[in-house]
Length: 279
Image (cartoon, rainbow, N blue to C red; front, side, top):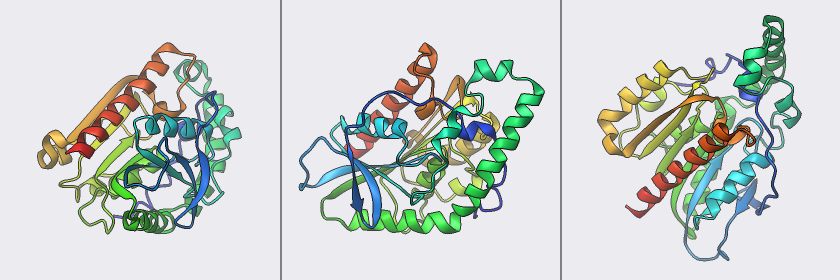
């Protein structure tokens, strides 16, 4: 089922968080017709397993996601982060415009919260229309098709954040023309039960916090109930206490708990991918 109608519920948590410090180690290249951030510790040329990162709404130029890509590349994989928004991400200046975490959220007045929702709607709703499924899905699938046809490509894992997490799950569907070998969804946005019903064999992991305004705990439970009978141990689900939407890539690195959660979710996801790449 298309999510075009469902991608109209706008919450401020989609465009909040913290900008991380660090210098990205990769570089941008033109891959399969799309400008792509590439992080690879190997020289290239030989066949190599690939981790395809699909970003949140801040896109491939967002330093946080580039730094995460570098972390994944240290495991020996080629990591690619395509600009599926083609130069039109949510501007990163919005990341500090709305209260970014639980502490600030608790202090915000009703007037502040109302203003945040209005600002999120004005920024996010038009962007969602421009990057609706009928526009974005063909771009993603064509890129993965070209990646699969590349003779230097080994196995492929799709790792998504927020907006990108749903597209990773779509790439795990039996009906996908370009199935990946492993799919990871970090705090998915707009993922529905119908999206996961066609997934019967590809190993999947889904992570979210219990303070997520986009996906409720009950929605995650319903999705797990659909997938668990079909995937068994090839499904990994973890709910993080007091973690907000975006914690795997936009958490506050000066907060010990948020930093630990970000490090934990990425380690578990990497180990999950390594296990199924080796299978």
